[in-house]
Length: 413
Image (cartoon, rainbow, N blue to C red; front, side, top):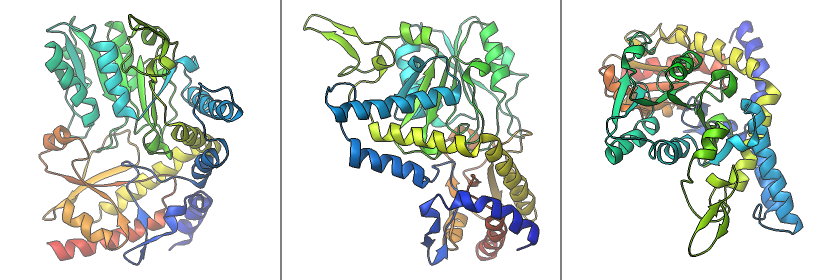
């Protein structure tokens, strides 16, 4: 390893030391984890926060007068406050805990849009959406007779902004757009799209699952109406995420689920709803998950998103340059503005076979359609291989990956 690479990776080592799982081996080889777009690893600070909750403060939130319940409630609401500040929401009432982006999108589809839709009304999404920002709108289409329209994607993997205005009509009610594509790495011009939608009176929902680990997100600056987040993408636990929604919209929406905590009063004749954000948080929440998510926000803030972005952009360029040296390798998605995701195919090699072989060298990559089947089909492919890089990855790992790819090619061609 060259001196330049050693110096670069040395700056990353203290971050890597925070992630216990990265010290393990796979098939007798050191683990190289290139699958953070599917789920990131967790730093010890997140693990410790959750462990401390269960060991020292475990109780249900909001409902108890005893000390443990008060402590649990304080920790739970502190996590909401951290997330509110992290995305610059105007109020903690605008941050709803969910199981992740998928549940958040379904909540908006059913609680906000479904009551407003009439047959023939239109929902606009892009060709690069994750299934979680396609299927809920298809279900809504079947329920209401609405029309689903799709913004095309260019050959370079960018949103076709020239086609967008032509797809907007007086019947367009919702525009859903991914902030960062999990399959291509494309960073979409969300602020520009939201401004266009706002001029036409269209409500916007942004899928931020992939953006939150890489970018500084300011929901007020973006101008979106709804923004969704998944904790496990941003070094937090699985099964926890959040929905940001403008308070006026959330106030006007009916609850999506009924049960405990989301009520103010219940009789057999009628029920009245609790205030925000409780109105949308029926039942016992994922308390430890929320606390872990709060710790993940603290962790990201301590390192700094600017430092994370600079490191990941360096890795992206380094990986792109190295992988282009492999004969027959083609990168899918070469947008001018990208996060640290490299999807690729190699002539004569099926991605699944490639993934299996490099796994035996210790490299964890993702292969398949990445829950973006329409997008992968648009590029005329059955699947791609994907290396997604995070703050704990190094240039040395990328350098080691290239011989493993070459060896796999020699075996499979």
